Length: 232
Image 1 (cartoon, rainbow, N blue to C red):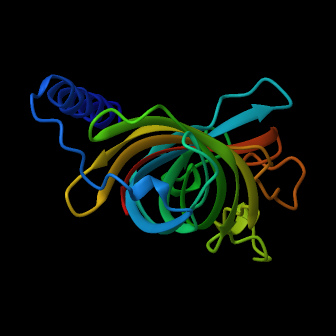
Image 2 (cartoon, rainbow, N blue to C red; image 1 turned 180 degrees about the horizontal axis):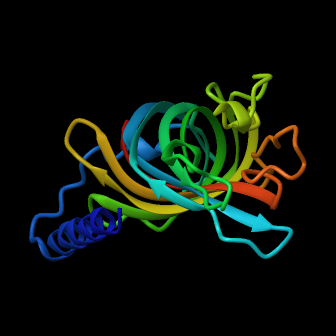
């Protein structure tokens, strides 16, 4: 994801430089941002891990991250030239693998838990933009979101003793990111990168309070990075 972010920054910088120094500065979609309410859709990639806090000194749980996919729609309410309120409901498909270390484990499958999550995400965000420069406009964005995990396993009566890792269904987050609006002849294209940080504990404990999987964990919080491409 770091490489992807650097590529995004380089492409955005090249585009911005070309726009600033071109002799012909015709504005595409010149009146687009004057609309009170606009709609669009987005798609992109994500990568998630967990932040663990412990209630005792133990070997840390390791998280192996993978690249997931996300897609959604958006509605954008114009407040003024520089501020917009956005609602971006969507779905994110996430895969994480957890590696546990405990002397009691005798088989490899005991130390690994594959955690698949399908999040229905409901973010409400404030977008703060700069003044438009030819056909591009940088911005920062942030706000709060609620995620509903369809694959949480929360109500499963089995726990890690039966090979079942469980998470809470509902998660509250805060989000922050940056991007650039690029005005093309027929639509507005927006690449952006955003961090998503859970503020509510996502771990469902095992029945055994001394479980080698959950007994030493004080909290488990999701953290994600999204690379989105928006079309309006």
